[in-house]
Image (cartoon, rainbow, N blue to C red; front, top):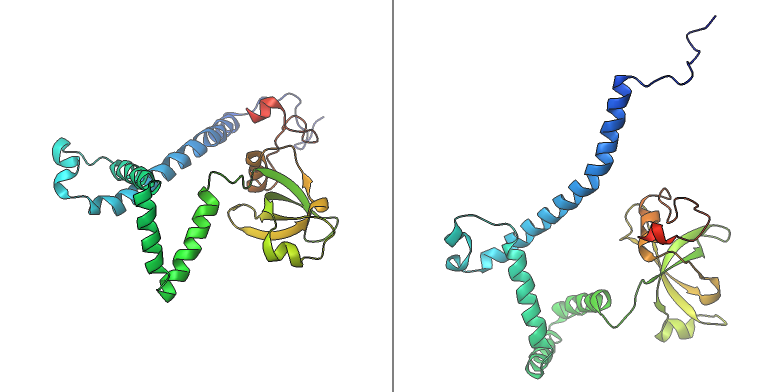
Length: 230
């Protein structure tokens, strides 16, 4: 005798269960692609809206092909940026930049804004510096509790001189979940920084997924395998 609570072994899932499983699988496949394309489409539209109004009406491609192509403003922006960068590397470009920065330094409010933006840009886009190229573990917010962080650089200047440490001091960035672009900047003694074998990309995935996506899905206790990285 069976009861309504008894489950049949090896019972084949019903039609609704199979449709639900296929739908969820489709969402997992479509969502990353769709969101990526939507983000790219939105960014191109935003850049077009800023750049195209600055282009003379007679020089816009839609005047000749009759179609408003999205992304034309992005291409113009990239070409313009490359040209400006090429000019800035020359003697004339450096002289003009130096003259313009001297003018900005005489403007109280604009000077502070320009200086801050310039420092951030140089830090983020500088090719000579290797920033955030190492993932690590530190004990935060107290001993015994570990957090993933990214090594920025070695502490320099007054911070390194005034910090009461026996060895070197590292500046590390602790990202927040699920938005890794915000977080905390900490200065930690080098001996308290545990460098990880995983890449920065794998560590970022772990932070964004709130600990659900590990670098080595077959064995999370082991370093990331070659197949997982690929």
